[in-house]
Length: 443
View 1 (tube, rainbow, N blue to C red):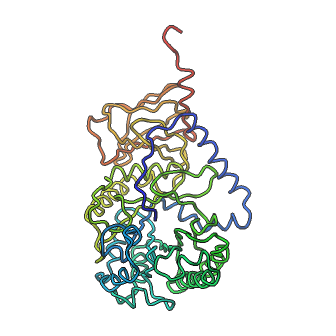
View 2: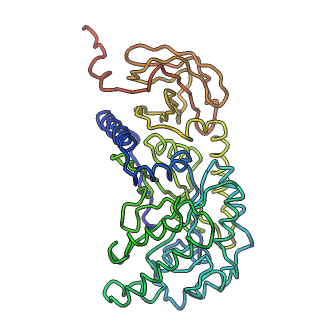
View 3: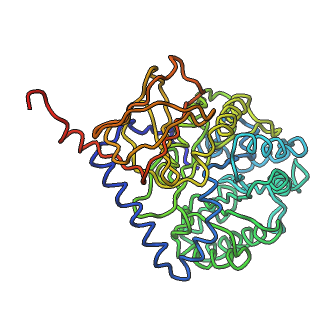
């Protein structure tokens, strides 16, 4: 993954921009589903579970975890290969650490897991015949990917493999860019490792490529790579980071929806590091995580949230606490997240929105007390209730706003209170209508 720090989205998006985006995305999705070619129809089939799932766990774990100074430590500190290789014997995680990850993922309301099988450092967490630089032949003495797969399946979670094309360890990892013989060797090695991953672990749901430096897609033979993957795993979905489009896009550390109707997934850290970084204490709160999840879901995306286990495989307590709180919230409010639809309303200074059918979910991040309101809702409201408890909420609606009244002074749910609003038709918001048409004094 990139080692850049997290970028922050602006809270407010202009009304005109919001209306334009909301118009483009549903049309594109409708077009792709109404006129699917065989390839599009197969993609829709393969990706249905993923669209329904919305929330997954990313795991970055490798030799860099031993040093605890970020997953880019080998390059950022210029550590020689021979020196870095010694970490392979020091990497001795406790048995079946992945069981704790999978239990936490399920408790957090996450539906799938993606683990680093090989990161940029070149160390393989899986059993391979192509190199001795792998977990079974080094310190762990066993196949860590096998343990991960078994743990995820035991908790009923979908299984994903991260694989970095870039390799700081392999002797051809850099010179392949200028030496054709080295390129052929390195591409054969890369395709061979991917073939093993796609062959040796049963059904795999996601292949998550990363960093295609230093070759072009043609040099990586990426089209051939994907054909091999689909021959071995007909139901798998793949991302776009081997240089060809794949099935979904992967914005990193920011929430950026695709405007063409293309599937997308934001991947993000819980602090500022993907791998274990013992000094990084910039942890996201459960409210931040829920807000990010809601933003992704609103625009039809998924949220892949990372943990960076310690070298023994244990999860930092801050990650456990945040994910546990998110899971508790999802148990009460998951109806507003899973199997949800694109949601056009988005204008509020204290709330976010998601939608399922004609039900609009208003997620109040900053509780104002007494009442909350939505401007420019064009759909007639039939009823409203607190999603967590089902308690009915009174409301009044006119042309320009809906007010939900009689609310308690303190937020009734944490970290976010969600109001389910049943509408007569698909909820649409037009704040420009309010700006233009609301009567001014004296008129």
